[in-house]
Image (cartoon, rainbow, N blue to C red; front, top):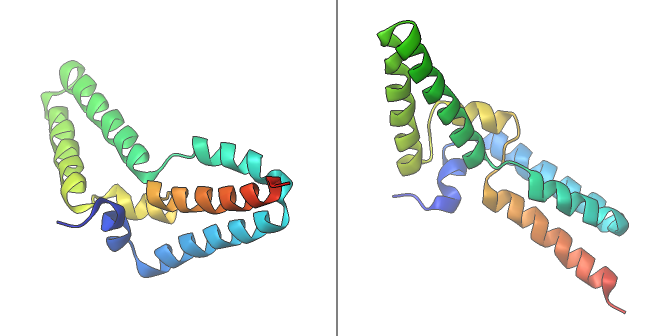
Length: 131
């Protein structure tokens, strides 16, 4: 089984992984020159949704909608939560499900990718704050 840290990137197109990495490195380089702006960026990183959270929100919304529609309109809608939970299980095992490529292209990062940026900025910040 693939490690948690690498399962989403391993199922993401190389050019998307490169773009995400390049964008992160560009932000780190920017904040290396603008140290006073790091606290604001750290706050943004604390609020950034990682791809796991986005997938969980997507899956729960679709599953709830399927149950609601299945109980009020047509029982066939109950297939939607069944499919969604199967994809959610597939994601938990493999790191891939249908929304992953879309979310990655939208710029959703893994928790590990967000943490790398956060720790790089904290290193700059700690050097800047030293007397």
